[in-house]
Length: 347
Image (cartoon, rainbow, N blue to C red; front, side):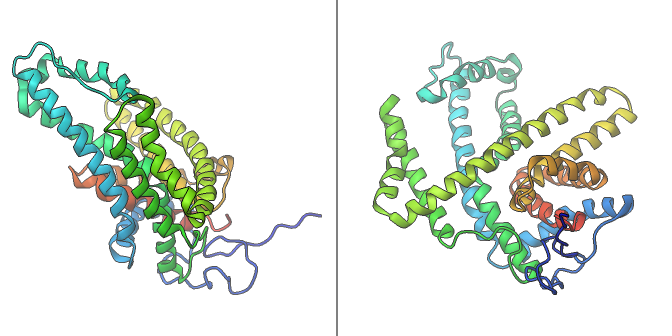
């Protein structure tokens, strides 16, 4: 007869010793001892999770430094894109009938959409104000996308630091000892490769893009060993994350028509969007616990009130101009880790 190993009622990890070897059975963070049961408790936990994430982001020692690299990289890419777009926009509104847009070959698919944007009559008529509005909207959406693409490894390290603060030790998925140096070297190699790629075109640009990383892996065996495992792990996580992202995006789109229904429709649409936004925010915390996709969706169904509240509050804070996306993306990820611990003690 198969027996089920008991789980720690505090951190949710399989209980091997008493007290739990992972969390000690007595977390430093008050409120993590008890599971949020019932509708009211789940809603309260969902509302409190973004605030817990903000508290961890600015209150846990040595955590903010892991936010800086992906934030600077994301902001730098977006600012560079907006500066380039402003140049094209200024030429288009100065009376030039033909604006020569120069794209790298691998970005040539953007040429049509950008030219369409510059040709919009209301954009040209509104001049600078119209561009500011478009740029603000692009920042709001674009920053979240770019940050999500580059921040995964850094967010995992932030989760580790938060757990060390909450429990006195890392509970789920401690990182490789070389990971901190490896991420710095990887970021430097990619930045150098991107700089080289801007100086060439076609196959040569692609070769210059990967050359620093290939050279680093060739001359540094420790980095090569770490990067091999890192790439495999990130590849698996990316595949599962893509499924969650697709479900999140499609789910949010399904609720858009409800906005056409007065009052009730607005409430339903907001609740649906909040649920699917929260589902994406919890993905890293659930992935670090080793949960397969089916178990993640099953948990989401059981704790729907908490996810709706978490998504709605995070969305409101995320909408704060400029600083909202910058602060709330890492804070919501940390809040997701806190919320997972509150909602299920048996993972």
